[in-house]
Length: 194
Image 1: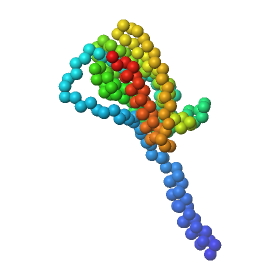
Image 2: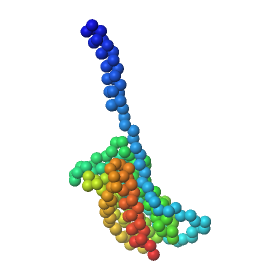
Image 3: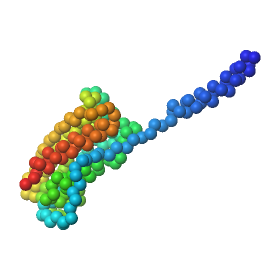
Image 4: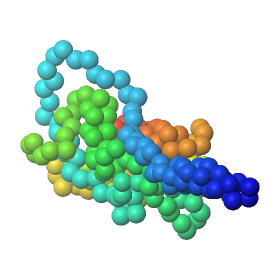
């Protein structure tokens, strides 16, 4: 009877154990995130004519942020890069696209492009030193604008923003980063309006 009982247990529990181990080692799904903006899309029927051109020459990202994974600061000296929560495209590409789209809306009297089209009235170089979540519960955005006008005058404008997350999780972090970035764009646009 013991031999039959053992064989029955082995016949039932070995496959069950294999199923449980298989489930526990399955790769979790990856999530991809894109920065958002809530500026209204311009609905224009007329052609804008302007001689003011803003060239977004470059968006340089600090090397610890220049990864596919979203970065989280876990204490005052440690940064971790997510392996399952990733940017949909590179951070520099997303910031450059947002900047071009949003400044076009915020500065309707300017042509804004990341391509050199003509002699620019302003050239923008953006350096991002922080664009991550923090153990403090904030999204951290910091860096500096370097603006060169058509007379080769150079102005540097540093910035740092701490945006509280409304809830836990990477979705809340990306929403807070998006909000902080849009607020920074609004401040920048108002500083160069003529």
